[in-house]
Length: 180
Figure (cartoon, helix red, strand yellow):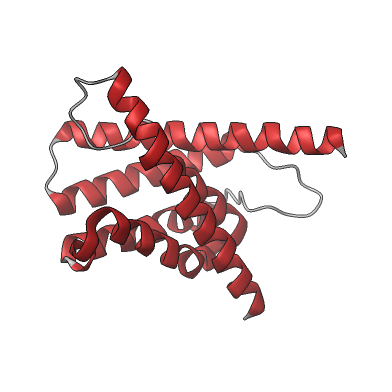
């Protein structure tokens, strides 16, 4: 139970922080540089990277670990609308899609989960994250009845968010290792 508690605090806090960075810093910049872009979707959605990395590291434990953070962000963005059926569905899809993809790939014989003595395959994690984004985009946008361009905007934001989050973490870990 203690592991789940610390997983929940870390994963949910990372999700909330990535969301705040996305909505309070990156989205306003996006609006300055792309004022004609009409979608509300972020073209650099860092929280997807948190979802994917949590699913890769925690497997199904990522679902309860991410749920409080995802709920907090949905409530922050939508207020009381967080309890609308479409929003609750979107929350469910947000926490389940990445773990489902990783476990589905494992069932198909492609086990990407970290294992002692095996170096992580970051390109493989990107592929899994892309598949999770497709699943998430289709299920979420269908629930909201969104136009096709929203599906594409979600995919772009999720995939670029995952890539840049992983790239940032790679540089941070290299810097920490070199400094220590």
